[in-house]
Length: 255
Image (cartoon, rainbow, N blue to C red; front, top):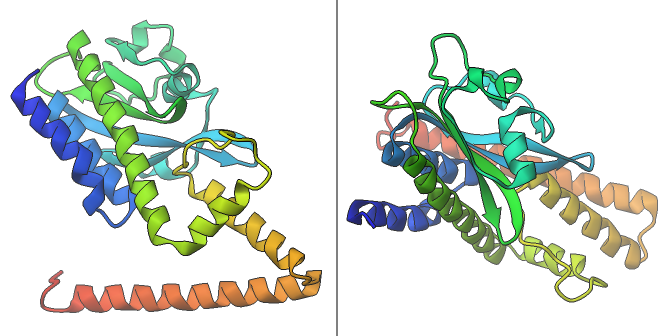
């Protein structure tokens, strides 16, 4: 294997460990993937549950991308990335407009018709899709580019899993929610930790309610406690935002 590629994969495997948020880490991973393979645009989409329906949402990207790409999640039965997530198979398309996926194309006028997409896996589960488009310095992507993208997708999945495990280890609340959710589950019934914040919020909320109810709290009391928790959370977020603004205005953080 190319020594430079080995070095870049090593960088990829530790990159997420130095990021404070999943979005920041994925942005750096997208940039490294695009520059290694030779593409002007890379996006990372993750699967999330929306009212029990699985959707794909753009979490981060490198290169030019319209703001509306982040506006709403996409059902898995729409778009090329959704097809990749459902099938678990990578795609290399040299001319999107002359392919069975022409009706799903979102490329604008004057953009390259060549693109690639690969599933991001954690264990046996597809948790997302990484997309590359607009080849840099050449007209279309080649088969070996897709091979490299598949390797990067594997490392991205492992990096996400490590990042989530680190954050779980740092949070006693998430540890407790994870343990409570495993009550009554058969051995091996739990899947991998999911990077979907909506699912994680439901997990915490469900077990928060369950434990309060088991402790003898009635409906009104649970609502009162939940309201107080939300109030405290909003206060902490306001303090965090104020602290970040002060840091940005300080001489060490020039605009």
